[in-house]
Length: 400
Image 1: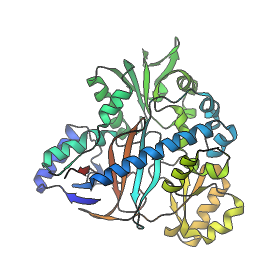
Image 2: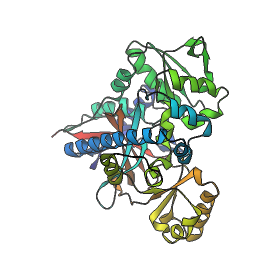
Image 3: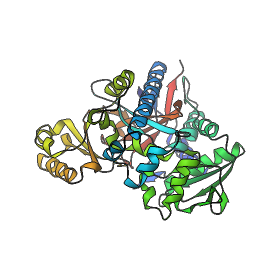
Image 4: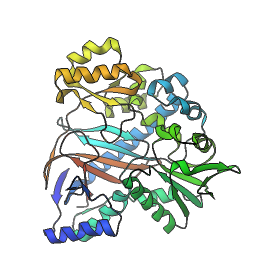
């Protein structure tokens, strides 16, 4: 893995960034006055690319087996933090429909790839992955490398059986509209009818879901599953979970919980040896916060990271090695007051790379659609925690 700057002069780079914003709908070009797109490529070797895809697919298969095992145990659903209002439908819903996931890899200082998260619900970066990487590669005229995957085609193919697709998003964030608007463009180009709205606009009438009084055959949900109980009519979504194809199904709320990966150590799940080996190799050790472990976690502060069960975009992550002993104790005690809302994960140290803006920590997201590779989404942060203000960098794979 290496970085390479765009072979453009500043005026050319500026015009390309304007094109990304005005023609391809990359609306969030700045964050607090700083650009969100770095004029660099992150370049993977061909074998490195193949290895990452294999690991992501193996991890996805292991997660699917584990998800089914957790769904079969009501006590386990509660333990991993699934909202009580969703537990029954999550346990009884039919086999999940089309799935869109993103597996996030960090290169660590011990020179290996580590999976920090497997985003099973509402992964971001769809428009950038499907449209910006190829546009930047063509505009810069780079040789010996290319974008990999075709996320737009993969999503369109997964939703091909249904003529009219309803797309819902969290309407308070324009970046979410940016994502579903891109998906709607791809679907419409393939001949589908689309309706975009808020999840609160969903109604169940005459035996099928409606958005803005328009019946839809399937749904694309870009709205966190754990927020569904707070909607004005969550019952419509519970009906959808049982009867309507949805990318992604509500059942992904199980694997989206950060506590999910602690479940094998806490519950008898009966996982296959292959899945156990994959989980041990690819995912950091996790455990539920408990009062009896407090003294050990305080003493081993630099070995642990504290996360919220359903935190997003780096929200609420507390790295013990980056905190004072007092701050870590306060964070741990807060978690122990609401233990089901948090998880402890073993710390690993990500390795930085040089980019045009200086040192940065990259996370390479591997998109999968129904377990098949569909593209890359790489973000770069000035600090080890990847947050909402991380920069986007096009990802290329060497061809020679």
